[in-house]
Length: 394
Ligand SMILES: Cc1ncc(COP(=O)(O)O)c(C=O)c1O
Image (cartoon, rainbow, N blue to C red; front, side):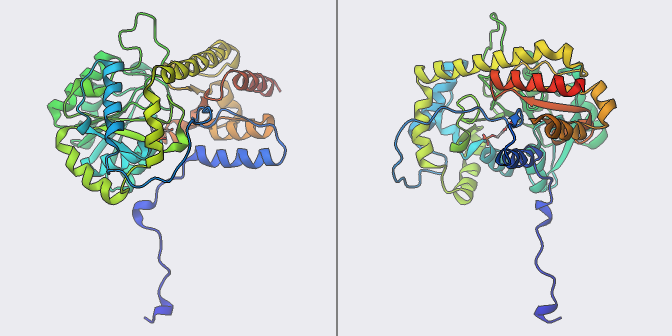
């Protein structure tokens, strides 16, 4: 075969993963806005950040696990919020929590390993693991366990699929907003310890919580406190609203620090330096107060949705303990439109309101549900609810 007869090179097998539907809709929103439509988007999980303070100046690489001041400041955050002592040497700063997932999955799992995830869940866990050749075991969850995995569900999944190398949990979770309380997370950490399973806890929505006044863990419970082999992953994207600065972190067991450093120094060289400098300002009293005020706004937007729920007349909804998501079955609207995708499309075309069908988060049952993000805030949510009700009444 001459060179001219050869097939053109194709994409790798490991890159054959689904596109993220949220981003496709985001693109569609931009196009509709350009065409003059007044689109209210409850689509993206992106708080509208205040302008970032500070001046930009040229910056060089930092250490592959981040600057020492920032790693120390993150350790200090664990002391302030959770009363936990963390050695800054166990903190690795990454390009968003997304960068942490890639590095942690690479460091923790080999191709062919099995890793369990709750379904519905954040799609990138599944898709990154799949791209890395790791086998994903979806654990179907529902209202009985607040859409979270339990030791019983995991034992049953092991009987069906075989042993796991890992378990990824999220609290508050995307898309449901549900949380693992101290007892529930402790039970999972303990289950993982006895099974020799690596537990990875996505804590990106910590602080965006709507706790009772007597809640002993108002910001969320960190897995760092509960098990020395657990891995916590977090980010400046959500509570601090710094999505575009691309900065996150992971707190690692000591045994994974060196492997992760080797990976990070090849894959990313270093996390972004200007972002790390700015992030030092995240941990001041003033910054926490400002962000807590933003969370109070999310709470008001959430209340609007919960109040409107009976009138929306959808199906069962997750309780939305935290994050800024409301995940609900569509009930009678499903009978009318046939699928969540069809409902979301009709709503966007007919009322210029964008919501996300559940298929991104749950390939099995997601066509029955939609996710509303109330990160857009109270006025946008009020306007959207009004439009949805008028659309459904047509
Ligand atoms: C549950 C969850 N984890 C992680 C991420 C990734 O965020 P980032 O890479 O900006 O830290 C998101 C973003 O929406 C998310 O919802």
